[in-house]
Every structure is written in structure tokens, then in C-alpha cells.
Image (cartoon, rainbow, N blue to C red; front, side, top):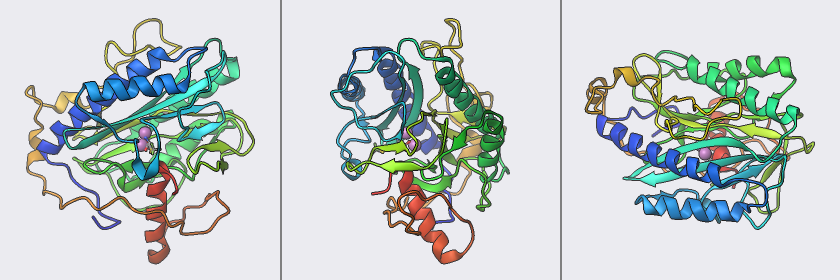
Length: 336
Ligand code: MF3
Ligand code: CO
Ligand code: CO
């Protein structure tokens, strides 16, 4: 696909992606349930590997551009792409677990925050507001909406709290390829592109208590906030339907309740499901033009050498735009 093109998924793709999203959701729920004080992120990773393979799927992060583990575990000031290791989770930590599963030829990508033991009120507020701005962005989505509006919804939502939205890493199109067009920027922008029925992409804002700039660790994956303050993130893989979006990675009745819920988890897999016929097919999608093969994941090549903190992401200018696109897409996977 050329940089400005967005694949319209076929009915077959959609069925496959719904299944992959379901696997990722199940694994995320199990991983989240294991997280607790004293547990290592390596233990979570081991469970993720086992449960993913048990379902006949493959953990997409494993060896993705050299990533060494099966999932990302990002604690406190880690913005994203934290690598599971032998460190134990501590009481008061806020943890993001990001799970991507490759199943039946498609990727399903999702993440959630888990509170480890007793988290202070500021940490809880960060997690709740991050969740709520993410939901607001999801609610904004429907056919005809400009992709650029997602970032505005998010930044407008978090502004009253003094939080900031990370610019260097973005959401992305997804399907047979882990990271593809479009880039989903979580901050105000003027990038072109409108949502159409059959588009599938992620929304995964990383919201910071302090500054959004990051420091890239020498492992070339772990990105922490420059000021050491905490960052939170949630992610879904979303399909644009005639009336809104369906979360392929939507929560199940058995999903772990959020800390602000009282035992009954919010179920969001149903958004958009009303337009899905009982057998799971999506007739409206069948007639859509079949996309050509997805392009290879763009290789990084930072468009604008920016000391590691690309904070711009300009819009326009065809040549640099193309680079940006590539650069942005790699972001989520990371710059590498
Ligand atoms: N799951 C991440 C995303 O949301 C990507 C992780 S790539 C990895 O796009 F290599 F770091 F695992
Ligand atoms: Co993603
Ligand atoms: Co992810």
C-alpha cells in the first residue's frame, strides 16, 4: 500500500481479525490477572507466551525487529515497549501490558493498565483519565471522520488535568501486517485521511503526568518519560463499521474489572456489533474493493533527526511526509 492508502478489509479479513483480537484479549486478561506485587514481568511474559501458543497463535512482538520477548510491560515512567525482565512489580506501580497475537494470518493488538497493590490517587487519576480520553477518541470514530480528529479529542480531554500526550509513538493500521497505514496520531494534527467502513487501526494514547518527551534506553526499545513522571496507555484494535467502530479486542464479561468498577467489567466488544449479522459476517464489507497486498512494515529512518524526541509530525510536504509516515509507523513498533 502506498503511504496515503488505507486497506479496506474484506469480510474474510474481518472474521480473521475478530478471531485474532479475541485471542489477544484473552491473553491480556490472563496476564493482567497475574500482575501483582512480587511478580516479575518475566513471569507475565512466560504466561503470555504459553497462553498465546496454547491458542494456536504466535506472540507478534517476539523477535519483531529484534524485540526479545512476547509482550511489552511498561511500568510507571516507561511510556511503551518495556521489555519483561527479572524485576518484580512493587506495591504502588502502574503497569501497562501490551499484547499482540498473530492468529490465522492476522494481528490483534491491545493493552491495558493494571494497578499493582495500592496506587496513590494521582496514579489512579492518570490511569482513569487516560482510559476516558481513549474512550472518547473511540467514540469519535465513524465513517467520514477525519483521522486527524482523534488527536484533538484526546488532547482536549486531558488538557484540564495538565497531562500531555506522547507524539513520538502512534497508533497504526493493522491486519496481515502488524504496523501499517494509517498512522494514528494522538495529538492535534492536520494529517489527511478519513475513516471508511472496513478500515482497521489501533488507538493507543500514551498520556503523561508531566512532559511527553522521552528518553530511549540503550536497549533501543524502552522509552521512558524524560522527567521520570508516570505515563499510562490503553489500546484497542478497531474496525470502522457503518455506525461507529467495533473493538476486535473488546473486553469480555470475564475480563478483569477496572479499579473504578465494582466487579462488573465494562464490555466494549459490543460497540458496533449491532450491525454485525448473527453468523458473524459483515455483508456491508463484502462488496468493498479488495485491497492489494499490504506493504511491508515501513523501516524507520527518522525523517527529521530530532535528538530522539520527535515531537513534531508535521503534516504536508510530500517528501518529508512520506518519511514521516514511515517514521511514525515505526514508532509504535518503535524507532529502530
Ligand atoms: N504492541 C505495540 C503496539 O501497540 C508494538 C510492540 S512492538 C514490540 O503497536 F516489538 F515492541 F513488541
Ligand atoms: Co499497537
Ligand atoms: Co500494542
